Image (cartoon, rainbow, N blue to C red; front, side):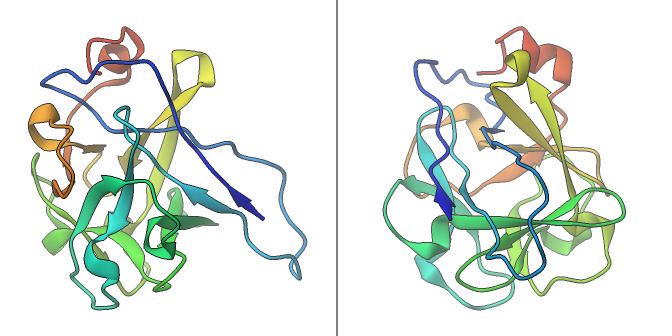
Length: 170
């Protein structure tokens, strides 16, 4: 089952934190197909693996919503959160070089038991959206400079739930 995830009606500010609107359902039976999500920015651009690359280390960028599987993600529960696994490649959303620094770029990489590939979902705006926080760095997925430009590479920053909940982060 595929599910389009999106948010509308908010202006992107310079210190934008990427917010994913994910609807989490009940656990699926082991034989059922995984739920597939499209994670979008507040500018309704999808989080995707650039150029549909299958390579480890490929950039994760924002791009207009299309029917590409490189924009589709599944959640796999792990120790400290969840893997965000690209539906097309089977690789995890990862922080480049396992960096804990704000501004570190996001890539896809072979899934492993590393906290820099695990993400927690923190509801904001009464649960209408989520911050995606990295378990290793405690930073959230971010659109650098708050740009709504297609092709902009995602990073992560220290945006807080309080800042996000007040709307000043997007």
